[in-house]
Length: 370
Image 1 (tube, rainbow, N blue to C red):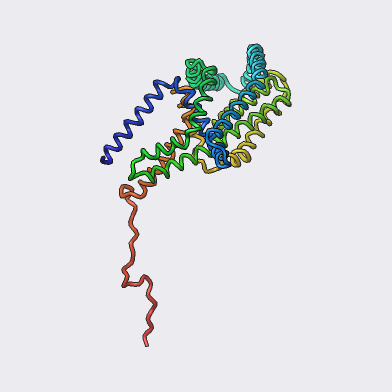
Image 2 (image 1 turned 90 degrees about the vertical axis):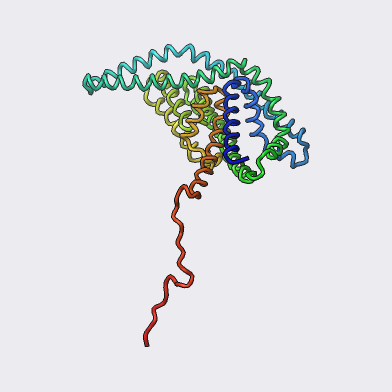
């Protein structure tokens, strides 16, 4: 098979894979979630296996412990989250009214400092920016919500995902070996190297970022609750959970927390305390948690992560969010490999190093005449 035929075959296979994802995205959600959990739990399962447990026993212990822990967390947090969400829904109209009154007061102050033309331009600019941002966020959230709804959601997800996780985790090594046997023999070593780089990127990001999100969620939730903020725990915990989107999670939590603080307290002091909590969380994430748990060499730029997650959620819903980072990691590794090959190729046109002739020294000593 020629290089052109191989490229055509791989292009068709990738296009077919993306087409299947688009058509069957809702059905694939528990399977993709199970695969993601199996990938995260595979190192722990391998460690138990090295300690003498069989693969089936290791898989049963790790899978059972993971889903029991998740169930306990849901049982503990569900009443608190549900109560705060219901209370929040009831207080939203009151908060909106208070914020509108404060906005009118602020606009009155601006009218005294700005002319009518500048004030009109400011209103138009703010309105266009806010409406555009709201529409974009609603489209992303709508894509995720539609993907979850069509699945009969959390019930079927909770029932199917543990089963998929168990079987994938039990047969993980066999699947990897089988896929390795399908690789084209001439390019097997190169493909293994690139897959190893993808695995290094994903393991560094996914496992580390999961720990960062949990720690940040607990920090924000407990700190805001101790600060006396209404719905402080739910706002803080959700802020931590969506912190896998760089800067976006903190920004959403900051806006929500400060807005509630303004409507609730009406004083500068408590609002400043809430803002300081988010600032401390950002410093904690950027200087301690992310460098220690995620590392600096994951090879995924924050801008690309944001783009991948928003695009995946908008196009494929929850499945798109699950696949966004793995696909971006693959694309990043392939892009770096392609760039490396290009820089080594004649197409780049790097000038060749000119070696001096062997019989002509580059710097001969001066001869003295007698």
